Length: 284
Image 1: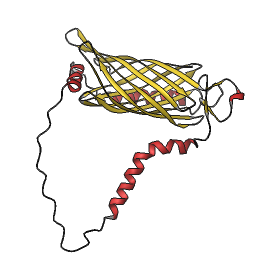
Image 2: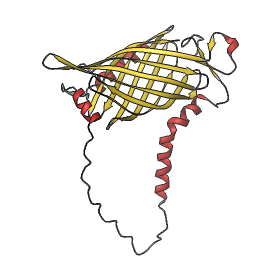
Image 3: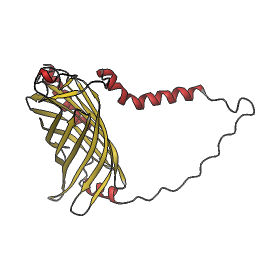
Image 4: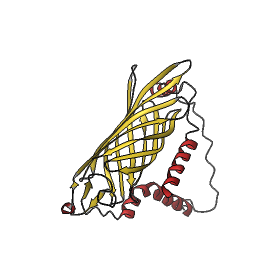
């Protein structure tokens, strides 16, 4: 009962959030234009003169509210990095090992500490996924993802997708999009694994190829068998424009295989490629 409600919630959110996606029949051409064309700088506007200080008071006094706002902003920016290790009890003093697949040893995916004698555990893991996504209009994509993770906390990941757009009358357009990153596992426990890293984004089609900078942040949550909740956020540049990508999925573990459903959003310049995504992930 609870499981069916979770799937209904994910599907409903995906359909609702997918509504704003660009689908005017020329989305990919607009994407190329933003990536490959250097837009002119906007005209400079003269700034208004600075307000005059009152004749009374202290010229060197600081407003206490500035310190309060600055501290709150610093807390909000850094919380995604120190919060997960605190919540998961990760002290960085113990090594993490990987099961063959999630829930192989009942709880979660990783085993923390000197536990090699407890069963079939590994110092590295490899996972790959294949997926299909659609905005239910004229944009669809097929893609894949690979992640190599190690007990040293360092890993490599790569994401790639082939985006196809139906362009009336009766034609189609397509591009390849993706990224590759060096990642660091900054939080680990039996139930939660979080990673962040830096790398490159890329766009390719028969006409040209472009690259940019990428920052990635994401992880997996294993609350109770057989559920797996995964999320990812990418921020970066591509050619002459910016890139924002995020996804949320809910998966069901079936031994080495996970079937998942969720929402994927890719924003490149003025173009949004967003909608429902479903696929399979293999853990090894």
